[in-house]
Amino acid sequence: MTVVSAAAAAGPWPLAPDLDPALPGLAAAIDPAAVADLFRLRWLDDGPSPVIRSCALEHALWRPGLDCVATYRLDFLERDGESSTLGAVAISRGGVRHWLYNTDPALAGLAGASDPRAIGAWLATRLGGAAERYTVAPVRYRAGTRCVLRYQTRDRDSPPLYGKVVARNGGSDLAAVLAALGDSLVPPCVGVAPEWQLVVQHDAGDDSLKAVALDLSGPTAAAFAAAGDLLAQLHAHPAPHGPVRSLAGDVDELRQLESSLELVNPGAATKYTHGVAQLEDRNSSGEPMVASHGAYRADQVHRSARGSVMIDLDSYCLAEPARDAANFLAYLHWRAIRGSASPASVAHARDAFMEGYSAGGKRALDAERVRLFEAAAILKIAGRRCRSLSHHEWQHLPALIDSALDMLAAARGSTQ
View (cartoon, helix red, strand yellow):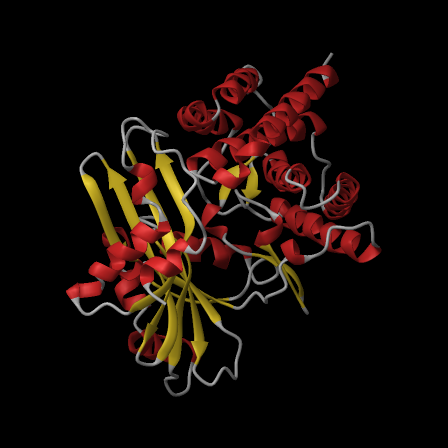
């Protein structure tokens, strides 16, 4: 199979060529077929390129009028068989650049953290015993920001380890948060390598809460109640130092997302702007700041024999308790809007989550603040669908924004 035929099998790329007038070549440049050609023509270190079997867009960060950085999963053939990696493409007025994940200059530590021999020796000093042979696979990559790596022994006789390389001092900061929170909330930490911007944790298990079927059953309720209890435990924990996140900061982020929404759906953007203005007017709160996940969702909760734990604490912050809970609920609501779960099953999971939080927490959540933060989170979901060029979900933008406006109206009514 040739590169072009592999990428073209998915059909024509659906983004309009005039989506961003300041970046007229954007749609063509991020077409997976074109990206596959880029990597076929120039691979790592100008060496011979492997046969690229498929190229799939995994993530994009579009800043209208400025640039777009997109990440792709590249499946390819090499002498040892089939393999997979991640690469990025940046489109700006200055042209198009591309690179493989482990050559990202902002994540210089990836060169060492993704080297099987180097990481094998480093892990041996942390775990004891002889150095193992590890395979290293990139799991998730955000160009210039962070990358998650899976370390698996060659004989696969033990659970994998997961490393996260974070820009600047993020690895050391993350390790400090994990140590402060302890193994009851997060997977145990193996160690931190500041020279690689790397922190490594034990496996949290493959059983993510996102994989739990959303239905009206007792097991579903129990799973979501456990997630609520886990969050309440985090909020009751003595808070390690971290950045402060507030509704005012969320409003600032929402403002930054407006330009992409205006280009994608001007009618929805008008309502979106109205919703952001309402949030801006209702900023003040007397709620305390607590230890917070910062991006709490079902896929951030993993279940194991020792109980539920949370992952991806590089978003850790200090915030009102309602902010984490509202983000979790907003993503549940999003599943109902896009039709991946019924409204009744989502309501069932929401109720269980809130009951779990109340049972495990020292204080109840402020219902009005939950509604406000949930409206903000839903508006973020809408804006991020545009910024990430998730064109297959743009049909849901009006429903998302209307839902947020309904929540704002309900919150306003609760204060009258």
